[in-house]
Length: 634
Image (cartoon, rainbow, N blue to C red; front, side, top):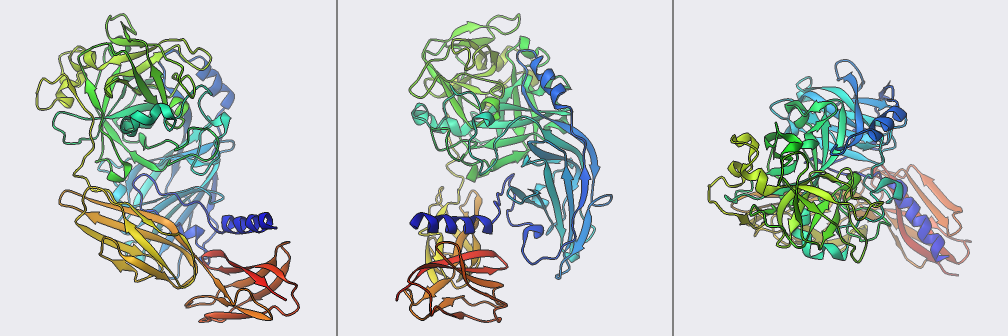
């Protein structure tokens, strides 16, 4: 019986809410199209012809070594609020534009924008057709001077694009969706179970395993990169780099060949739409179960320097500068480096094989000097070792990942090699930082030194570090599911010695606080509510928004009951849509609709009901809320 009750409660909760996942320095929130009670016109529908997957797979099989891992291709489109979609108007005057786009068979779909400009107060969301995967809101904060923008991939072959503008901003925004990214290789999305078909080879070792225990700082420096080159998109890896000024400029080091594929060399407009994933890893060593945090992304960068024009005949490095500072909530670690050229006896590489969650590969055999092209001494040759939880190697998607020495300093980035789960003893080759420093040519555009040693210190190594001056907003609640009228206690766990706090408790009383630890907040209405904390010190400001963090459910009394009981509904301004009571066999025992507005209590007669447990369910505009279990005694 207990299993039946738990299963029913879980199903009710699951059906009540879509998965809302903020990302790309987005503002979070819920699209109007997923808000119950809003009357919106059905979005216009556009079907885009899918590519020939068999042809794409044949092309991938013929790729030369040292080529990045292609994961999708772009399909030309031309969608904007001026030429497509459907407009609706809400009661408050807000206009909502919606467009549904489908391309059959896609694992996921992404969007590449041109002339992207959102006015203050407007918002853009993208979500899967079933509402299970939502990204956004994107706002005027996402505007760039060049007008380019891109979204991360949304799950499935049908997505909804939704733009909302308040009455006062009508007609002041604009954007053109000029490419639809069609993903044809398996990838994992927030909330997905980890499927063996969706990930790297079985020999790979998650960075959450014991092999990564001493490398957690370095792991936070490694990023997954969704690369755009012409009409194709690829997976590569990269690393956040420290410099001698310790000014935390957001430099990303990857491989030059990651920017050079069959479609040519990445253009500035391509780079403006590269997407960087931070903390893309799980907190589990096992590949079973759910993934971890997949939501921290940034869009856009520009090239600073690379080994081109020598390319893979040199040390194959590519240095990028992100378009803005890395948010403190992304917990960036700025990796140190060593340019001595010493062959380390042991160390690791941390990478994203096949675009999968972060993995760690270990070497315990001394590196040897080698090369990739005809130029000697450009690369380190690596042989990987078996460890407690596997035998990490590299795969497509690992390209550009850092090679760390035993002191945790970057000494190279991956060009390619022969290793893999079917060839554990195969060697891999990493372009040397020591060669990239000065030896690819005389111009600053082909050397690392001018950028990573801006003070011209002549240091041969520096350690990695975090920006200790940067404040990071963090908090927890003592509980996140409570009955109506219950108090919740919040505690601040922010980093960086904040000096001021600004809390916002949606649905709570009081709704705001400026105390570090605001104490008890009372929730008097059923619903699902967000909590926001903004913290500030003399150097920086950071905010953390937890969408749908506090879930408030109706209460029942007396409990146990005999002849009748009351459902405590809270301080509704409008009545709930429906109240139902089920027994443990899911049989409907009671149903009432159209509860009068302002009803704080609803009386239900249980006369004649057999003794046992019952579940009371209240449905309102925010969803379905199971109350506490009620027991009827006879």
